[in-house]
Length: 407
Image 1 (cartoon, rainbow, N blue to C red):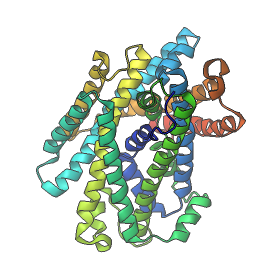
Image 2: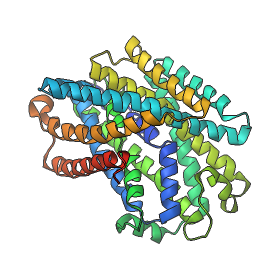
Image 3: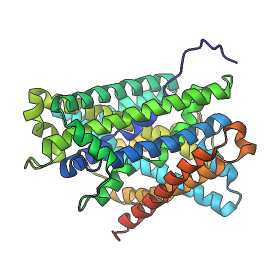
Image 4: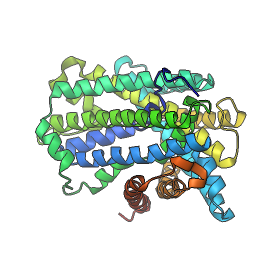
């Protein structure tokens, strides 16, 4: 048992925030605000709520069982066929998928650095890849966590400062949050906004990260309580960052007659932010890109190792092999200025299948009192979880239809 005076622990929740606030979220949120104003803020509010529900369950599962989410899936799918399908989905969606998406993470951070240095995105892609590799190779969770927390704080300051300078209308924000509407042509944007926040690989990352932060010698009740607070504050902060990005874009572009172009967002903000617009936006984009460039390989290692039954320690050879493969692939494609489109489409389809599978599995396994004891779900958690699972199933289906070209 630990002393009651022991300091409160934060960290794993901020890794989740660091993972979902990347170039993709920044672009999607900016586009949503520029084209539809504040009308889709309700989708952001729902995505934050859904993310907390699923991440809290995943973290509680990791703390109660001292196993990762992938390990739990392997152990509790009684059918050999379903177990093998789950492993294939995890490897494709998280392993191959993160390798494909990693190019975008690194390219986003490289683009930010290139706007203030002019040395070329290829050069900066290699530099960012090496920096991420150095942090992951250290094998020290505490160091990695500290760097990611610092970058999350940088993102918070940058994007909230931009929103404060732009001064969006508070009444419009409240209407957007509390009055769900879907302007013409906005359905897929709303889905994308939710999909960039509620992502499967964060569930695998969180279940493993909590074990690093709260070892078995800390009481389970204390660990679960601190994890819930950490998750709530961290995911809430991620929601505020995204809110700031959407509000800034809505104020700067929606209804103003100014054409929105994600590549020139910083330049078009100059009338509002002055000469500092370029540097401010670049700092936020760099922080978002680098955090995702670090967390994507880390999440892939945890997920694939768990699915394959390998050791899920940062120093384990298999663990290192996976993150090196993901990071190298992303760095190579980013440096060449290309995107692995076939791999991205495959990963998107696999993620569309994996999200509802993981969501349903989480809800089912969180009701196992033989496994979780007092940490099993109560009626309220089941009610909220069922709502989120229903939406996750719908989102997964829509993602598959979209990738297939049927929407």
